[in-house]
Amino acid sequence: MHLDESTLNILKQLHPFYWRPESLRSLEVTGATSRIEIILSQMAEYCHPILRALEVSPGPISTADDANEEAPYPRIRMPERLLSNEATPQLEELILRHCAMDLALVRGLSIFQWMLTRTRGQPLSLEYTLSGVAGALSRCPRLSALQLSLPGPAPFGLPDIYLPLLRE
Picture 1 (tube, one colour):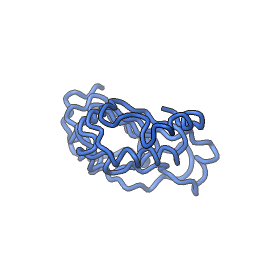
Picture 2: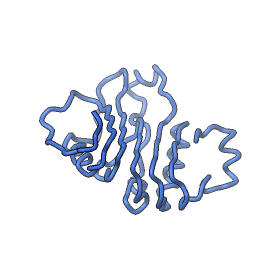
Picture 3: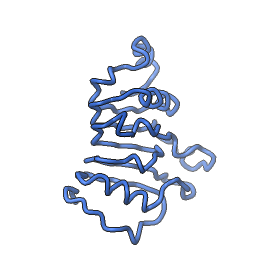
């Protein structure tokens, strides 16, 4: 779902959601950061019992924004309740671009993509540790696809994590 003005005007009639939480299986949200934050905040208030795939991607970052150290980054913070087992017990695919999140909530995924890097500017200082990433991955034994693009140097000394289904 791309959240542009015409889409929002049509969908406002179905407030607070544009779907029934109990029947939503997959959702891709792209668009302006402020609109995405509203949708995610509203989603966090409800249980989405069969949601299996969630992709969140704010609109493109311009070269000027990317180089601007004052621009907010990451652009969105995922609501903790939305990633909780109570709100999304069947979540298997999580794709996040330019979104911060609590790694302690990552569990049971088969597909995990988390992109947090900028192409320009200074390295980012974020609220994650390599042990937190390792812990998140260890809670996903069925992981078959993984893509992490995180700031900083390549990690060394990570503990071995057994992920038998992970494709090379």
